[in-house]
Image 1: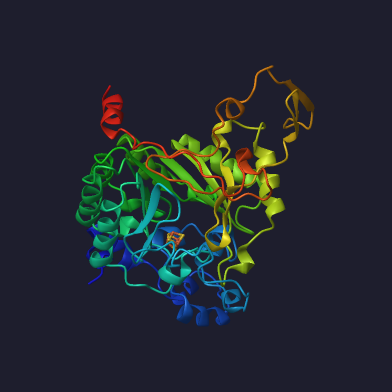
Image 2: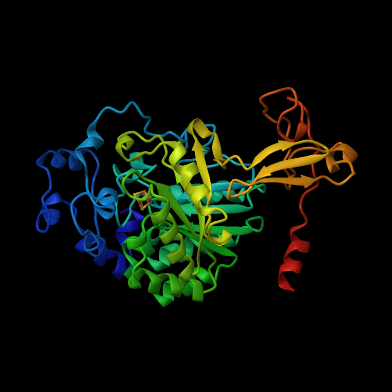
Length: 411
Ligand code: SF4
């Protein structure tokens, strides 16, 4: 039995009620007959609640949830563009260790809804057999790696686990001394907000510091029901962020994105990332050009509160990691002055102070992480990022003093 089979009554109810064939959609809308074949290849599930948000065929809610025959087009895109399953990044099944101090732990392959653009479509829309044994393997790996201070618990959707199963995962992770931060990534408050109860929120919040990233893509998803769920989570002391995927026909419009972010902030959710859609097989029809993402950030930055501006990133193919994409505000930088362009297009001059940089004084460059030995910075030129030369060995820090850190947090 997979973990998600034993989900709480709320999860079970959602699974039972959800539409898993296009016939349920046809009760209300016209669905092209060629979409049926898609369901054979990539499973579908649309919670009754979310189905009720669709107003018409092809609208932003439909595009995210209803199988589309274009998913079967040969788009020449890879199944695992982020190389999450590559042995060099996945030391044990369903765990990705790409960055120095954090890992991604998948605790289920089930979701309340199967989003048509999912990065992990190969696992979520096809099923991949995440179970108690692989979760424990992942936890054992984390326990054996003291450099891991931040664990992202994802899937599938972790809230598909029963409260008890999720509590068990969080408790085992929290018991590992070097794990400082837990993060739960979930789309549940958006697509099945009824799953979020006061008990669930307080249980998750009890494992602080625990952060939650939710996943809303369109302002019509921020309903009263969703707000109730988000309020419960925020009231339980869980800092909330939102991850949005930029999707053609859904949210590739600055006005839509601004409205979404304003509504999220009213629910105490900070827009965290705007993702350029990953190069995932069978999702090409939903991808946008990067210029559209840059235009959206330009339309937000300065024109509304910085709280409402997420970081726009491309999650680099083949394990490149998240790379920020920013409009060209910095036009020139030398030791005397910085030439900038502000959000209105005005040329701004900032005078530099007459002091050397810290790197010039100390000779230190690069990134310093607890217990992390950095031996090489990859750069594009002889003097690339932070002025470091290719192949330069960077200083190794002493182990971070976790006991002292806990003392600070206690105050
Ligand atoms: S809920 Fe998340 S993991 Fe599941 S299908 Fe949607 S995007 Fe993928």
